[in-house]
Length: 234
Image (cartoon, rainbow, N blue to C red):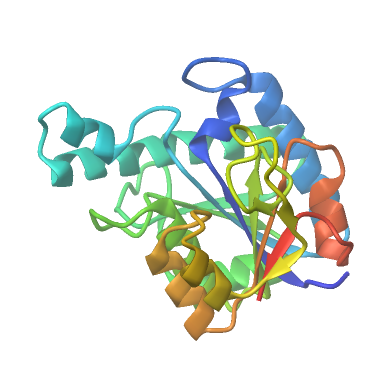
C-alpha cells in the first residue's frame, strides 16, 4: 500500500444517495464496505464527514439566522452523520471510535490527539465529528487540520466526480481533467475543490490530496494502493 495512514473526507451530501436530504442507508452500507476493505489491508483510517445533507451554517445565514448559531447547528449535523457511519461500520465488524470537537460525552469521546493516534495504531477507524469546534470553518478545514494533527500521509477526498477538472464537468462537457496539479496552480486558477483554509494547511504541511470518485466500487482501495485514480494535488 502506498499510504499507511489516510484521512478520508466525505461530504454529507454523498450520504443522500438519490434522496433530496437525509441519509440513504444503502449508500451508507456501500461506503462502510469500501472502508472495511481498506482497513483489512492494515491501512489506518480516519474519517471526517460533512453535514450538508442535514444542515449548513450558510443556509441559516441566508434565512436570516446568525451565522455562528447556524454553524454550530451544522456541526451537530456532522455528528449525526458520523454516528450513522459508525453504526454501519460496526454492523459489519469494523471497530470504530467517534471523537468530537464539541463535548458530547454521552455518545462520543472528546477529540484528544494522543488518544486518536492510539486508536489508529490499534486498527480502529477514528471518525472525527463536529468539524473544528469553531464557527466559520468548513469540514474541509477540519479534515486538513485533523490530517496534520494525526500525521496522515494523505487526504482522500471522496466526491461524485472522478477528479479535478478545468471547470465543473457536470455543467461544462468540454471540461478536461487534471491527472496531477500543484497547490500553486489550484490557487492561480481559482479551482474550487476545497476551501482556501484547508488548501493552505495542506500546502504548508506537505499533505497531498487525492480527489476521486467515491461512488465507483473499489476506488478507495485503488487510491490507497497508489494507482492512478482521480487527481492528486501535490
